[in-house]
Length: 318
Ligand SMILES: Nc1nc2c(ncn2[C@@H]2O[C@H](COP(=O)(O)OP(=O)(O)OP(=O)(O)O)[C@@H](O)[C@H]2O)c(=O)[nH]1
Ligand SMILES: [Mg+2]
Image (cartoon, rainbow, N blue to C red; front, side, top):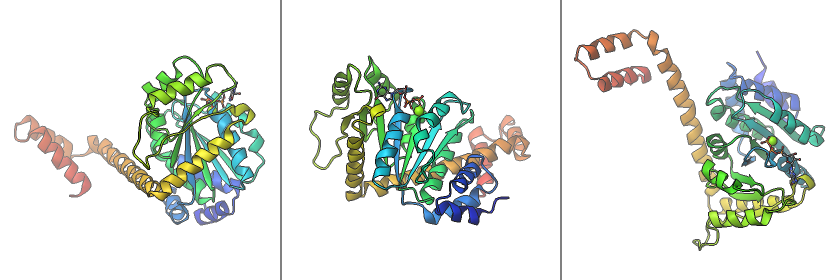
């Protein structure tokens, strides 16, 4: 058994091994998970969580690394969580991340962690926010969450961030693909990376059009900026940080940040509760009530809905 209070204390002092151990306990759904989360709860809420999402190869890891450099220059402590919702293995992409982040490997002010779901469907939905809590409690000022993959999983991870950055790169149809994947709705800040390549301006224009940014907005509405970067050379990265800080300030002025966090917490609680319920329901085949109810349904004594109601009431002790 891990000494959770000692680990939490060491994590607060910024000891990377303790942080790693706590995330492993979370990720592995340790029997001590509840103890860990209870110990962390009073220490959380200080970190600004930024989600970085986009199609494979668009430059998320390179951009994340460049953002780490920029934030470190500002003296901030940074956590990086690279999550791969699609891959059942912690293989190529994550290995590549490690290489691209290697310049920060020896910096005690930076904590980098990769997570794969190992094919565990829905596994990420609860593990990622808990890992973010570990980094938050460990004193990270900013937590950058990079998601590999496309589609629903990206949208889900993005919903766990205070600010979502959507990355695109020049190229035919990238914008359209993004629109299809539903990630055009989630950006607070848009970045057209690889601006050293042809077509960056066209991509930015296309994006501007698709987002309807030319249209009038109500005063005080957030207008997502589009920033062009060459992440590989660190160009434009300060502008991204500036856009992030602006968005954060905008959210704080309007209670949007607190509101997003409340909604996130509600979603988190719901996910955990649904998982617990599903586990109990999964046990039902061995439950003696189920065959009895089935018998009554077959006999026409009960309809299946009423039977299900009875079953659920029994589960939740209502
Ligand atoms: N030309 C150019 N190449 C870039 C730029 N930024 C990143 N790259 C390259 O694009 C490739 C992919 O970069 P990554 O940062 O790994 O992209 P990613 O989105 O994290 O990729 P996955 O995690 O595999 O989805 C690498 O070879 C980078 O060197 C850029 O601004 N310009
Ligand atoms: Mg990557």
